[in-house]
Image (cartoon, rainbow, N blue to C red; front, side):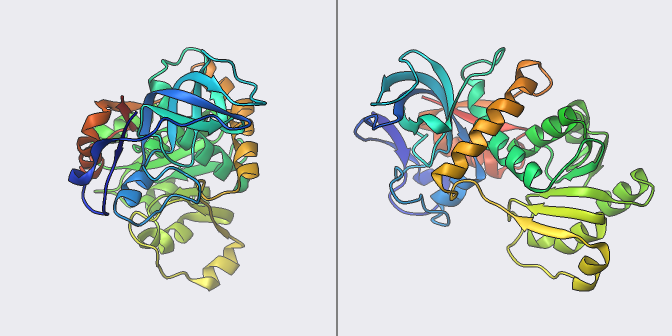
Length: 323
């Protein structure tokens, strides 16, 4: 089968098509013929040599796919021909990928098979993090990067759940599109201060939960914007892994800072997350309250262009690779 990988860490131009053996379905697994693979920041980090795949995973990138089951291993509950989406540990940049039953969901009603690839990684990340942060209906959630692959889904899921959503985005056009996803308040981070805007919108209280992909550069201001009893959930480090935290303010606000990743979790935890997404988020998708946001579909052989697009700052939603 065709895959896309690099021989050495480096730039997007190193991503090239090569051949690899087709996977075989083990016990409790299926093989999926890939209709599309989502492109994520984790893939970019892996290409640069900064985020190696976990033991036993394929060496090439790709954490989420949609497609059709073409083989079922012993004990698998999935039938050949089923249209599914899958959260995988790696190997999605390929024509075929093996996935465990527990990390597979049916393509939601009303969602195109290809576009379904935009859902599993972001949905699992968002839902598991918001539950860990204890977000409740009626609370204010601030989503940083509301125009990104995770952000576009976080805004929709939180709004459908009944939270009041604020988000940041760069520029008026992107801000307007975030409003269309369900955000009550959109802050143009290029020209506005999110701390001031969120405080004004909440009558001085601040955000109950902050979902952050920025990392160190926003650490202090994220604490500033939290309400008393607020929770800061860090899921990305786009602008640094280190920052300064005022512990006095943390104590005074009785605030919580939590961090989480998805790929490195044990299989049991991933299975629980996928099951929860199927039970709680998939009905939101089927009802139309949550939809995949796809910026572009790019041929698998042009994965280098997809990674260049990711670095451009122009993407709104997800980029998909189509074999």
